[in-house]
Length: 390
Ligand code: IPM
Ligand code: MG
Image (cartoon, rainbow, N blue to C red):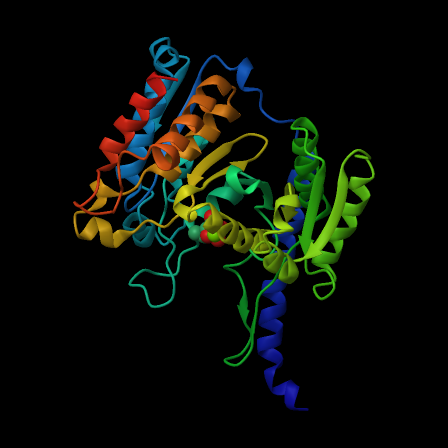
């Protein structure tokens, strides 16, 4: 009886839900058609796009200098080209009310790999319209399904690699929930066989190629039975194909606790998880390493790959004219991951070593985010000087 008064709203919600299902089923068909990973070695030229917002340009330009320095010969010979892509600013996105303006997306798709500084994600109360996160949109548009986030603290025996699913889960239609009535809001979480299989396989393949002996799935399958349940079932199935790797699974709540258990946490090696749990757990993990500002993140798909800093765009630093003091360490680390991904492993190793020296063992410069510390440019110079002696 009471429900009938809402029948128009329920119909409207059903219609929206129907559209979402159509979109997601189309995505499944696209995934079925997907071929193999791109082979960078077969390309005449690798185009590296560079973009970001807020303090983004200040720090990505420094990371670009470092990469150009390490790849000087390749750049000279035209084998590697850098392309700065402007226009991913919150002002442009707000004016057009889109997550990524069409011309920017076109430019991004003309690159093979992308080095991305932070972008601004509007939230309630901001002066910006509630456009979708550029980050999330880019991951979806370029189908960057594997978000790989390493966390290493050698002196504590910690060497974790997180494989966060990057295109599904709570994020797939995160900006398309439905306010059914004034009182009832519903969001959706999405899982597909194709999307789940490719992330779980990526994690096991990484483990196999890198001598890791354990892969751990993290879900809340006891409660979120359909989507997390499917993720866990597929994990168990695929694990059977890797008899030399121990496969176990944990629920996200106890896993969050175990990461602070100094006796147990060093035993984890590769972790594979749905999108939202991956988002949360990787921030926690990065905190042990020195904060999210010290972490880099790779977003890998079959055609494209994007490497990013995992901190925010700090618009206040820009307003106060302090962006020249922003710490470029996270985006430079993302640059090292990029180098290794496109096959320049020697240069990547040098850069990883230099980052360790400059931020842990030697630490000749201090970054404070203001004029009491070094500038991003000075830090980049320090990194380049350090690689010279390696
Ligand atoms: C991350 C960030 C993003 C996410 C935000 C900025 C959309 O927190 O890369 O982890 O939630 O994925
Ligand atoms: Mg996050």
